Amino acid sequence: MKDPSQRFAYYLIAPAVLILAVTSLYPAVFSFILSFFNWNWGVRFDFIGFGNYADLFSSAEFWQVLYQTFLFAVVATALELALGLGLAVVVDQLKFGAGIIRTLLLTPLMVSGIIVALMSKILLDPMLGLINYLLGALGLPLSPFFGATSTAMGTVIMVDAWWQTAFVFIIVLAGLQSLPGEPIEAARVDGASALQTFFRVKLPMLRPVLFTVLIFRTIDTLKVFDIIFGTTGGGPQISTEVMQTLAYRKAFSFLQMSESMTVMVIFSAIVLAICLVYMRLEERLEEA
Image 1 (cartoon, one colour):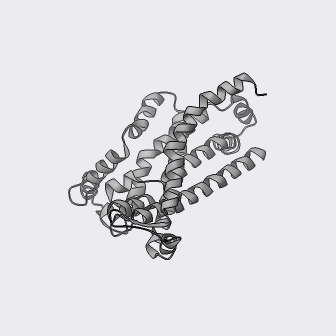
Image 2: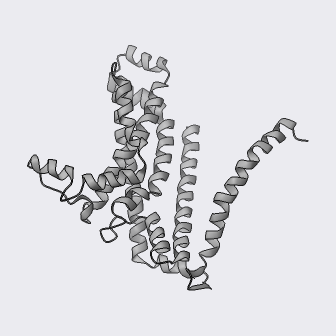
Image 3: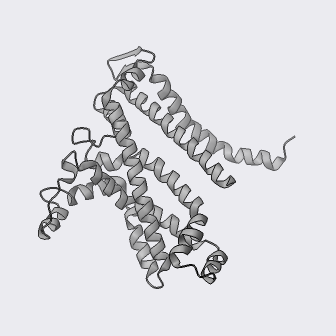
């Protein structure tokens, strides 16, 4: 017989489990079922089996979009981790003004993604934007930013890095400030330099925090939507199209609801696989 306190705990989490089932599990199962149909809104609703999956896997556009999704996620996450870690190390060493700098660095997180997209679109406008004006005043070459296939993806990554580096910064800074002081003091007594102390003492102890941030930012960048939707909409051509915007375009521009759901089923399976890999890696790191 279960302990009454355990039974009470189940009662407490039951509403959350029910809400999760209704808002997440049901839509996921419903989307998976409808991915086997040819559902064109208001026109047809026919069962076609794996037809949608076959069409997507044989589409060059789908593979390009999948590649661009991972390109954005990998580059943006790596850049944000590097910048966030660097900023955290610098601010952690400051004796005066650290609070003000920390507040200023957190300012971008207070702005929603679509607002960041619109702000960057205005600032980086090839003709009237402030950034190109400053580049011209300094005698530097101008850039089309969002307006060319060669620069659009890099610009979107740069905007996301400006927006989300603060998230990495504040988590890593909290991790740095919570490290035990004894190993660091022992390294200094042994004559280790600041650089040696960081790489051989602080960084290994900070590994769990960095790994957690890596998981959060990887998942977040894989499901990017607002930044791209608000800046390029997936263009020019499809040079910045990602899985989320592809699903949106298929559903609400072409009314191909089942194809849109198929895209999200495939993408959800990929993200789930990545999460499982991360969890396995975390277990191995804890065992090491």
